[in-house]
Image (cartoon, rainbow, N blue to C red; front, side, top):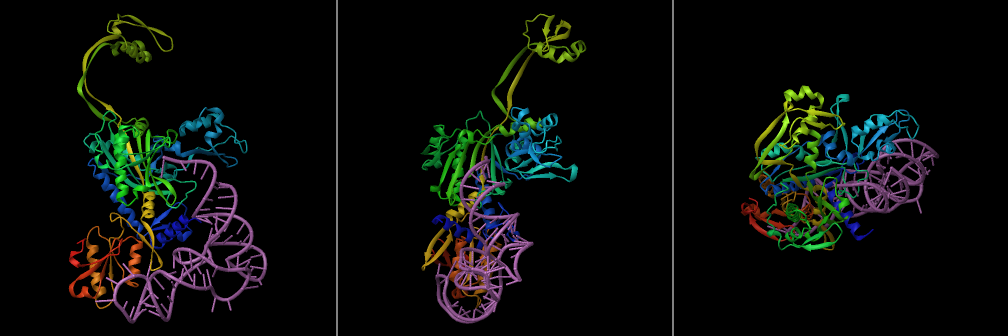
Length: 558
RNA sequence: GCGAGCGUAGUGUAGUGGUUAUCACCGGGCGUUGCCAACGCCUGAACCCGGGUUCGAGUCCCGGCGCUCGCACCA
């Protein structure tokens, strides 16, 4: 076992023992890919979520929403997840052997993998291939299997097929009309949510790195592709970003330089990379163990046109923890196609466009009865004519038949149309955060092993912004009223919104400091005999163990 | 999913078919102690689950579950 593996085991052990991260359902033997955040970890996670939300709310044009995790089949079919994440299975009615429907139809379609569920279903019915196992020709209805957790919505045969969402993003897209209205129909704007995502991984590995149920935080930022955004990169001017391009070349440069040189292909992607850096470093990720890596063309997800991952180095090597993807108009367009509803924004022209129309159209009252079913085709042909055409005219239909269009079938169209703007599908830039993976690396980077009096000593140097407990209140001894005063102080702390205090009166004072250090409590307040006389206390700082004496009412959090 | 290794208190472990399962840290109580895992006494806590072999299984065999690693898969 390597030195790092041994450290990893000690860290895991401490996280379990201190109630930070624990295997879920351990009582029943555990469940792969599922973790509990314990009495310390639960607060840690929710604080991190809040810091994340606050960080993006600061942009001023971003709102928080929350969408269901249970998602109808059609939504994820439109988004491409059914095709990308699933295989379609059908079961032989005779021998009960399950087969992949696309594999059965390989000889009957050039690319059955690309077919939708209903197309595949009808092709299966039409071809009705033999079962490779027993040669029967009796297939069940096909069903989607695999990486998404499938669930019926509603009971029995009236149930509708659905999935647990594999990402939170689709909720932002399906909410687009409400978001557009909320933001007074003005781009750019963003919507975000933190929540659970589910992927029924074949083989979850590496602790918190690949989970079956995981916490994600995603922002969908809608922009006008024709507008060049003005972003201020000055706050990152002095920072050298480590950027690995799609070919694996490493560039070290300032962010604005990477954008100007088109290494980062869109300035909004660039500015989100900067903000992502700020967030991660702010919650305690070591900036020297962080890099951005651009996806190669063949690595890009089905929806993305450019993607930068943030990779963080830790006990498992470099792990992707954030993806910042330019999704183009992929998602909104896909949902438009699937539903027929408009998911567009309007762009006003600087100068209205004046369009002169001078041509022909059919006179429905005469042409309709005359051409019947062909009237539609005739209309299209007539409307393509120049103004100079003389009727009657012979026209040829698509099936080769010829018709004569007489003057009474048509009328002249002459008008001036003023177009003040146009509708377009917004583009989307998406920073997507894997909260569990980030949390893991925060713990990994905060975990420090030292020695104290010849004994190994461990602590979590967590950032104050996410420390699950803000202060520990410790009576030096639980007697002579020290316990009472300490408990009162603890209660007073807990009354204060957002402040979490821990009362600990068990064991020697040194042991209590050590336990506080292990869960990353930044500050301990100790009540001693003197406190009873003059209401002063000792404030002990986690990182350097320094002590200062303060009056209770001068404590920094009051 | 395939292959290999592993599974003993909260944590880390000892245990080569035969008493009441070892040790340390750990948790709790009492005492003591004037501020960094102190000390004393008391106390709590485990053989992953299910079958089998055997007079007897933590130990051997089989199956399941879980963990780790490799292959495959993977935003």
